[in-house]
Length: 206
Image (tube, rainbow, N blue to C red; front, side):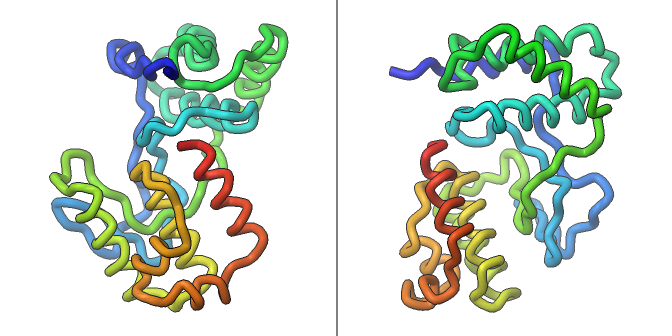
């Protein structure tokens, strides 16, 4: 049995690991979600699903995001402790062990990058905490919004993949087709190597 993620440790120290877009303005906003027609790169929701960190690259990205979200919170002396806690397999955030020197080099590299906004995936639908929606309700909204505003292309498929992963749901082309209200044949016609690879990576994280 895998170790349960110790998110309480972060909460007890008021570490910020979620932030909705701050300057991008939603095209539609309801009590349950925000919808960005052109997408936003400003949505940082770490540890939103049960998926764990499986690679060094992903671990470093999580550190960059934590540094970026907390750089103005007067916790400069805590970053080393936070990063080491996240990187310790026993705390349930990662699936691997990392050598001390490799981890220290990674942490130093995060500091050297200066807290600029980390690279991020484009999101269109951002659900609010405590929206009251179950998985079925969220998927229905995603399908309505993405399907209504987009042609069935690689971008629409990718958005649905991200939302399925964000809700801890395994990605299948049948599920994507259902969200976009099209046939699986249409999905296959619009797939490329990058989408197929991303599907594998996202599913492996669950």
